[in-house]
Image (cartoon, rainbow, N blue to C red):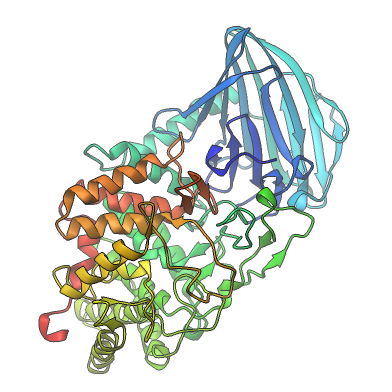
Length: 603
């Protein structure tokens, strides 16, 4: 059985990532990249679906941490006979992808057990394993080849590779697992101690570039490192999570594949990177965005693969039992075929703020932005599936319309800034029309707040972003009324829900945790409304729910105190970063983004 979601840590090489449990078991890894079929899938199945365990054979206590300013994980095992540490990491930038595991004896002696079960194709394919002349092992199945090199003797046992050894104080045992396609030569051999120093320095040098200050800089730095770990270094794409099908409710069926890149994260991602001083990464993300979105405007998707792939067919992996029996296990994501109007706003907003932040425009991105806006003229008033990708019928979602307004507003500003020859009069007319319609049809005067969709009386956490994107100013009473209504009616045990699944038909059975990013949005709202202490109190409460190495899942159940959903979740960490900047500087990302607030005559 897999560990609780919050018991995992991430290691990665900016091509893929692995999840390591507190007991030294790697229970999830997709090779060679984030969206590849998993070769360790026990996270959503059983041990027979693949894992790599390295831990004491006897009873032990464990603690862990990341080496300072890095993604190198150190787990400390204490037994009755001695103490040892397990150092886990993935070197960055080499031709091959490697996982290195070093067992370092600190005192006494510790009996260790290594057990490797490689199962390609999401835990289904058992590889053919053979011993090479140098004593290393080669495992091969179809297109995949993995080698195991170790300083310890290993042997086969019931379709597993195992090793039992004793580590004494001052000794080090090394294990290196390496991937290369099966039709190529064997992966290169590396020096584990050497690449440990290189990898640690790489992360520490990267972290040192961050422009951070104040009491929350450590939390923000850890989230920035996590975002970097979720970045595919060849394209700049940033996946929403390295995992698939971790449930939003234990035993439920809200289990999705998040190993893709969402346009809805675009502006938040860009601002988080730029405000931290990572302009190079922000440029890479912008460039990925432009390549992915290139093409016919009517084919714009809400998500793409790490290289910009558009075909992400959803299927159920029926041989996997699911995390704590949460079925089905899904790979691919059918939501890529949905109409979500907000993505047009996200693209325009990200490009515009990129220009403001120093990312130079070119004829390609300005032309694409213009084409997308011209297409939006013909579809902005259609119902869609909304930011939360509901699988019920399309609706006139308020946030979708607001982001359609953002699309016109930002493109107009870009056109004015760069003197583009476009039909500004028409764009401005549509922008103003959308604004008036939203204020008329989405605001409930009895509830004194905006609602989830036209004619609805339900709330939605995305409405906290109304002033953030500049649709209305923070001092507008409709904004204050919406924030207070969400605070009263859409919070459970101190955390913000996306919406009430038991009252909204989203095409799925009700039930999920509190969406972590939404609570960080509330932090920003409270602070902008002048409630500094309330904002700080909520922010620090959210920091407390991070796991022992500073990671957050998509959702959180405050009653069971468990993390839910895919892990770690990029949007949760993006929201933490942007909320953290609220306390670092007066001109943080939320304020920057809301500079497009219309004048009083516009509203």
